[in-house]
Image 1: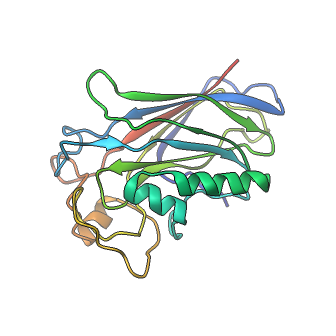
Image 2: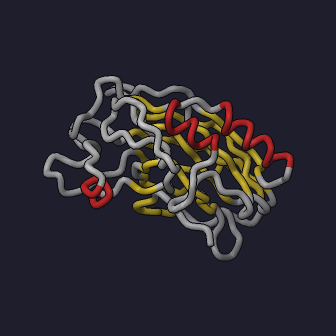
Length: 228
């Protein structure tokens, strides 16, 4: 069963569009990771790696909680590079499991620049899911994104706008505990896990908690808007 991994709140706005075989969505990624919301060891060089977004069928999974990261996800999580996940996506495109892909640029958020935008992502009736990934940088192997967000309603109609808050995740490939920790390979590789307050406390991770150390707030928000 498909799940909305990394989603805190899924908000649908407006009515569903009339059914079309293929539509285009704009994707906006808004930064919510900052020193005020996530003060624990917030790094001075905080940034996001190039955002990778793909539309796909139910037969493809980019990344998913409680499963092992692929080589492409591992590379994104540890270095921010995308060559391996690009190759994976190209391979699945050839198998008709991935429909369209798009990529952002390295993103250093500040008071003037809080968002990055993907102008066009094609989605089809056979490929109604969207997944995305970006590295929380610097970090050992921490990521956020979307896992198989479905853009049709129960009747198969396209949703006009979807807003999703997303949380940090541990890719399970490096055992560092802080943003700028030295490389400590996780051997054997562990499953992807959400960096919840309980997980952070259980693994002595020094990151992401709020000023009262009582919760982990979302690190970003995605907005997907269908183009008319």
